Image (cartoon, rainbow, N blue to C red; front, side, top):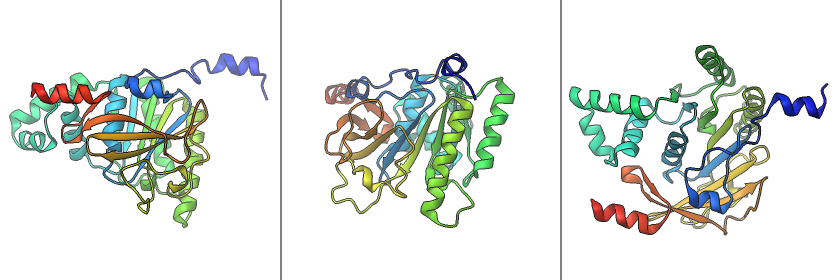
Length: 271
């Protein structure tokens, strides 16, 4: 047992806000913190992986990204698209040449020096632990940010799919306590939602795993808009129904995000 005074000294970074990347989200009350779990939940093809990559890259913090859902080639193409503003098709074409590979390799080395990736397609909880321990041994510390993309790809001992997801969220909570890192967990919403152009309610989260994350963001894409509702927020206002949301403006073909429609239009006008 311990006193609260000693606990406060032992974990000074717990609860510290992460760097602001999207002022629109910050002003809306979406402010991820150290030592907590932020879940990004959406139906497929809503842009949650693009958003996570952009968010984590721009924060510039030491990051360990478990890409269980997408392979190495896909993540390389998406990150290069985010960095250059080129479409993933253009990036994939350039990567077929040795010159293109060398160019993008140098770019990634310069622009994402603090990010490390694990591409095991179906990691177990034990593998997550081993990778975090290896990171700690290599660098002398745990990463400040950990991303799991996505929750459904984790493998557990529970034969019931929904029960396994609940086990995994509990395992993530244990890892947060051990590492003090900020966790971002990507997950799916039910595809049975009535209107996929608006954020789904909290009750639509697959596996009903809403208990443990401190913040849950429900995402929905409608044309150039990425609509984001805070369906759970232990630190501020929330809209469990998803009806109250903010917007980022996106050009997902190029992995680009903008805080306002004017910024998006200006970027397109330049091109």
